[in-house]
Image (tube, rainbow, N blue to C red):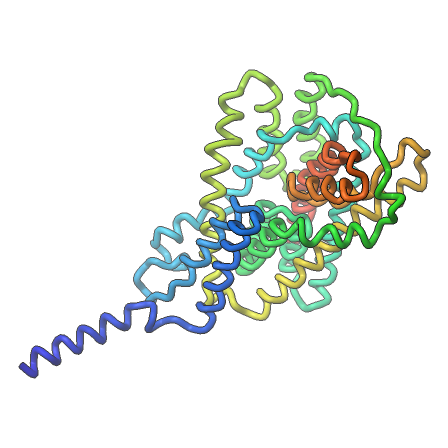
Length: 384
């Protein structure tokens, strides 16, 4: 009888060592709470649910403690999650996301008013501002470049660049980028109100001109050649973005465009969100660097918003009345499409219920997508 009891006791103890209860730490608890918070924001507040639910659930998956060597963790070679994470580590998923973005984006607002591209460029100040701050805080040049891209508010670009420059920091950078993309409606309005006067908020802009189909077809071709000849290292992102847009605007590849902007981008979004979330495994994620990156992400996002708004105020000094640009669309220069453009619209309507800024804001918004990809290419050229 004693032998049977010892046998059962031994195997019960062995079983318990393989449970999550025997391997959890306070770090796992913290990260699980973060994952639950992301899911709460997605469902209750409807902040970017297509991103935050996969990421939040991925955080839960990544922070179920397990006994090492079972080949189930995302960092364990041969595990299923490790194979799925390959697309993040090697920068496969971000270009596919850009393909879908291109297929669903209408560049008409930018084509009809090309000067709006300057606002998208000015908003990239957040990228280079955060880069300089990160250097001062002791991050090396490659790490600082990867951290800075958070200021572009573009998750796929952040993943792509960090996979090349600072793979060890990719989880923290990706989580920061996607978090601030989701919090656009919370972060940007106070900055916009602080930097503009009531008179500036009431500026009404001329209706955009009608853009011809020929212009829409030529835009992705010319855009590809102009941007990639200057920054060839941005080809994976820019090439797929403009290719997706040509599929949309050509009018003869509707099936391909529908696939790119529908099933394909949905599948990749699920994979990228789940694996990025799972990469926040507490044992490797909860470090002083990760916390510093999250703080720097907020700073870079604020700088980017300020850069866009202040740049509009600057160029308005040289424009006649009737041609001035409403500074409230300056925030849309960050590439959180279309959320930052919606913020321009919402804040504008608070001060004038008949002043619809959405169409105007989409110009710098899509320019910001191009701008962040170009900025990533520039950083990659100098730092890789």
